[in-house]
Length: 144
Image 1 (cartoon, rainbow, N blue to C red):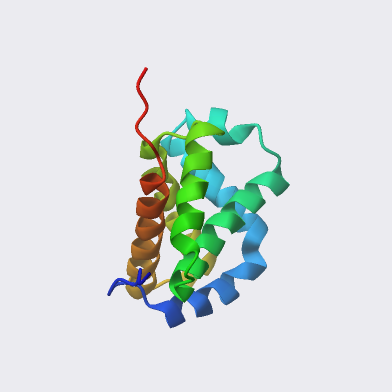
Image 2: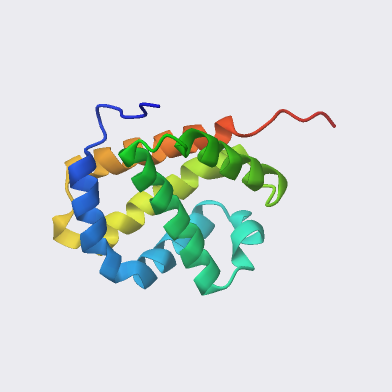
């Protein structure tokens, strides 16, 4: 499966991840503070999780991005399954993904400081949007 898009600069994102990895705790705090400000209803979905759990969720997101960039052959099925898990186990609505991605980009920009560039912003947005598309493709229509 080729999931590359022209706006995703693999080398740039890999280098950036190495740089921000030393700020993982701050990144986690910023992501969830921003998400909860944007979507107070997200507190019900994420707020009950401990800091280590929130860091694990964020690391899972970044891992999905990295795996996507590597074009792993199993990624499509894995991300679709992760989407299905989020739909049924966590009851995450699909409209929660864009604010999470926005919060992630804002947090990455904040921890990057003066190293943040328009190219990084475009690449991160494109990569997270692609993962979100793949996650929500794993959702199934349910009737009530």
